[in-house]
Image 1 (spheres, rainbow, N blue to C red):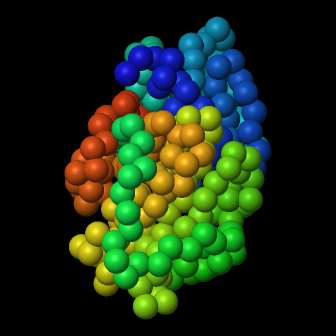
Image 2 (image 1 turned 45 degrees about the vertical axis):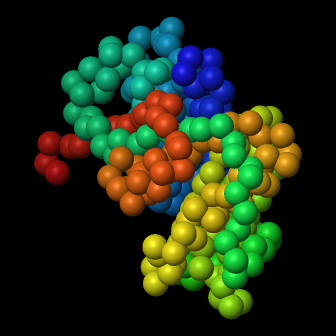
Length: 251
């Protein structure tokens, strides 16, 4: 995959999971939202630096300290220089949570299995379903709700039901010909029944009907079940990224 396409995916993914506050700084996007999501609380490296690296890193540390947040870097492999990674390591930063960006051409031909009902949901209803399926209390999804309400591109929030009971959910965000898949969850007691595949099929059909040609998603490197599902669905590696955080000597 060429660099231009990777950058298109990168920007589409940032738009699909927006921060409540952000600022551009010499080719880096600093995002501040709060909550547990690293994507909306990190320095996203998107280009080469014109300012001295140590000066830029100090500026970012000060910016996040003012917001009461730890400084975390998100380092996409295609856009991160060896000099930056070496500088961060030298200052006591440690890389963690390697994540893969996978993609494939859109296949909108799959039908839902018999016995499954698809519903397009409002944000409050979808959060209720996501809470029920994932076991996360609604109070723990406050910042998730903030992100969902900030999304500007067209989105679809879906739930899959069997006998009027939610068994899986997911979100698709469409920007031009790119379709992003997010928050794909299957109820624990309902796994291994093809519901994750059905969510992906439903979102692909929704996106394909609106002109999507290529789908992408982000998955953590240690999520073996998800990686296995996406490999079976034909997704291939586009690029990867890691996070980097400061680890103090006394920790």
